[in-house]
Structure formats: C-alpha cells, structure tokens
Amino acid sequence: MKRVLFVATVVQKHIKVFHLPYLDMFRQAGYETWVAAANDTGADVDLPCCDRYAEIGFRRNPFHPANIGAFFKLRRLINTNDFDLIHCHTPVGGVLGRLAAAKARRHGTKVIYTAHGFHFYKGAPLVNWLIFYPAEKLCAPLTDLLITINREDYALARRKLRAKRVEYVPGVGVDLSRFTPSIPDREATRRALGIPETAPLILSVGELNPNKNHETVIRAMTDIDAYYIIAGAGDRQQHLQQVIDELGLGSRVRLLGYRTDIAELCRAADLYVLPSYREGLNLSLMEAMASGLPVACSRIRGNTDLISPEGGVMFDPHSLQECKAAISRILKGGLPQAGKYNEQKIGEFSLDRVGGIMRDLYGL
Image 1 (cartoon, rainbow, N blue to C red):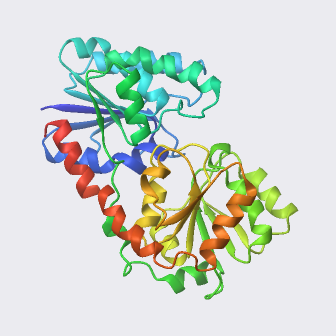
Image 2: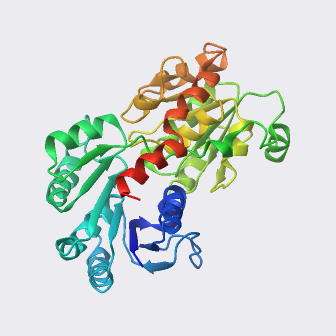
Image 3: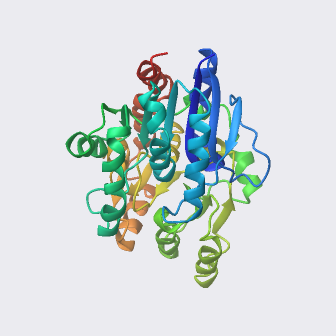
C-alpha cells in the first residue's frame, strides 16, 4: 500500500483546519495516511481520515531547542517508513520536514511544501528576511513542488527560490456547502449571543495573537455604534479583555474563545473585519465571503487577491482612523451589493476547484 505523510507544526490549528479533505482524498485513492505534528488539542488526537498519527514536539519558535529533538524524531519516522509522498506545511514543519526527508527524497519519495504565506514579503521587518528567507533558500532545492497560495508569494518564489517546480494554487479551498443561507438560524444565533436582533454585528475570526491585530478594531469600536465579536483563542486574550474593560466596551465587544460554529456566526453578522498585519490567504475571510458578508480588511498580501472594491473596503492595519472609516462606510450602507459580489467571487476559491487542482498536482 502506498503511504503519504502530512507534516505541520500543530494538529488542531493547522491539520484539522486545512487538510482533512486532502487526507480523505489520499485515503480514497488507496493510500495509508499519516500525520506528523505537535499535539495542541489538549486531549488525545482524533483525526478523521488519518490512519497513523505521530506526535512530533515541534515548537513555533524556530530557535526553540525542542525543535532539535523534533527533527531527529521526524527523520527516524521518515527513514523507517516507505513514504511515497510527503507534504510539508507551516514554517517550522516545512523546514524541518524537508530537511528530514532529504535521504528519502534521494530514494524516490516526492516532497511537496505549501507556503501558507512567507514570513518575508514586501514591507516585512528585516528580521523576518534574515531568519526565514535563508531557511527557504536552503530548503528550496530539497523541494519537488513548492506551492504558493497568493500571487505575491508566487512571483517571489519564481524569482528567488530554486525549487524543482513552483505552482500557484488559490488557497486550501472553501467548502461552500457549509455556508449556504439555509443552514444557520441567524436569529437563534443572535439570541444565544445576547445580540439584539436589529443591532449591527461585526465579526472577526482568528487566533488572539499580535499579528491578527484585533486590538485596532476593538479601539475603533469606541466611535462605532455596533456589536463586535471575536472568535478565537490565544495568548493575547487577557490583554485584549483588559483593553475592552478599560474602554468600557464590555457590553458590546466580546471574546468568544475557540469556536466550531463559524458558519452560524457568519450568518448572524453584518460585516466581517480582518485587520491582520500579515496573511497568506486567509481561510476565515474566504468563509465570510462565502456567507455573503461585506468585508473590511487590511491592505496586505493575500487579502488583495480576494477583496475587490465591489466587495469591501481595505485599510492600513497600522491606522486606527482608516480602520474606523472602513467599518463605518460599510455599516452606513456604502457597499449595498458587496455581500452578493463576494458570494459570487469566492467560487474561484472553492474546495471543489482547489481540490481538483491539488488532485492533479498529487498525480492521483
């Protein structure tokens, strides 16, 4: 039986979010499916479509000493199993996975790496270029297929990285069937959240970390008459709650924690906001578009692939005033057809379309 190995830094926040359809694709093609990643679930790992899970103690910090042990454990796993294909993801998992697979690749294993957004990009801090760019330069020759998910990264990879093959794929694919209007009950979701039926509701989805920049939107809410909910967990939760309390926004701004009912939350909302400083091609933004929401988002790589002037308003994520203006323009009815436009546009990024592209690239 053929074997495929998916490598990523973490299970819950990466493999489960992005890759279950592709594990299922390989299983349906007769492969034994393996996953190697750190267990960030807080419990035993239960991965649908995964035949074998190997817990590898990756850490997101590339300089964490635990990554040395993780590398050797992963290399043993690869060298003692006959994998036909290894697909690597995330910066740490991507680098260590390709280094660990070097011997197997010489013996015929195909190695793929998907860059979900290079940490070096136009306008990135110099330290990002000094750390992540050399790592990608080193690993590119160990890569049979380098997949990029936004246009800027694709152009950069073609110019700068010597992978055997470079391809652009429009994201990981959105399952549009999960976001049809008939599935969630807008009124019931609002009642459960304690949101008045007619009140404007703004939604953001994303990990509570500095890059996601939720604080800018929270501070903008002091001048915006609406409710704001954030679905996500992370190490900035206490800080963000303190900002909410200090600004007296506790009745209108809420941190919901990690949620699995994103479709319901999208249908209950009137506007989606993504204020990140850096993205590859954000899945939650695509899900909001599939739900027919207008969007206010940061003017950055990836977002510019998705959002057109007809579907939303972009702003400088470093500017509180631009953020306020973008949200206010949409809430005041400035883009009445934006939701319908986004719902149509997102078809280009559907799971059916992307899955077909990936099936061809995998050779299934």
